[in-house]
Amino acid sequence: MNDADVDAERPNGKPILEAAGVVKRFGGIRAVNGATLDVREGSITALIGPNGAGKTTFFNVVTGFYRPDGGRAAFQGDQILGARPHAIARLGMVRTFQITKALARMPVIDNMTLAAPDQPGERLLNVIAHPRRVRRREAEVREQAIELLEVFDLARVAEDYAGTLSGGQRKLLELARALMTRPRLLLLDEPMAGINPTLGRRLLDHMQRLRADEGVSFLFIEHDMEVVMNHSDRVIVMAEGRVIADGEPHEVRTDQAVIDAYLGSGTVVEDERA
Ligand SMILES: Nc1ncnc2c1ncn2[C@@H]1O[C@H](COP(=O)(O)OP(=O)(O)OP(=O)(O)O)[C@@H](O)[C@H]1O
Ligand SMILES: [Mg+2]
Image (tube, rainbow, N blue to C red):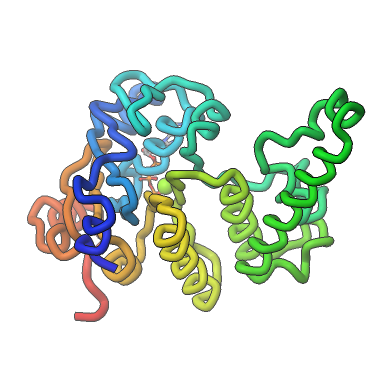
């Protein structure tokens, strides 16, 4: 995977998400302090930066979970900053969210089918007036759910309560649930954290496949530089609430502002292959 592949499919590499001057304050803290960035359509873009840089807060603002204090953001050309999470999700930008207590008390398979949008069976009138259509859609949703559970090695626990899964399995279920909505841009906050390397590998492969087969774009927060360098085609770097660098992996690795930001934080940015 490299930029040339992406650009061959989408010659203008047009942005799917454009954020400008995004601000989010918590009391006196400016967690996001004028962040400006673009995510190119069809890219797998990594968002990196030292702890507390504002990465997670940025995700929460652009997906509608936090009210912004300033800035603009457009998804596929539609202004979305300040819109409700479900409205943004419906447009096709989805982030994973934790399995809540209520979902933990439900079987894995139900967690999946509930995440699918536009199910005619949600309306009682449809169940009465169009029973066959409802059953057909339900069967489709279930099939899609099982396929995804198989990809993430969760099919064998499909009937177990989500609350009984291990931490790693839960993370995979969160991702699988997000995929049930058929997003155009998926935002992942440290997807590899807490899952074993084999499943991590599978998750990365699945991201590549979704990009290749369905043109899904990804923006993922990741601390593991080996993963960032080898599995993203663009890297955006945040520090202190702002974007301080943006480019191909090899470009940001040698960027002085990036090195300084990480040195200041006490963590080291390095390519583990070197
Ligand atoms: N709900 C909140 N209330 C108050 N302060 C918050 C809240 N969420 C985040 N912050 C603060 O905002 C800043 C940015 O936090 P954020 O979690 O966005 O960073 P991050 O880049 O995701 O860091 P990490 O890599 O450690 O996950 C931090 O100073 C954090 O303490
Ligand atoms: Mg975070």
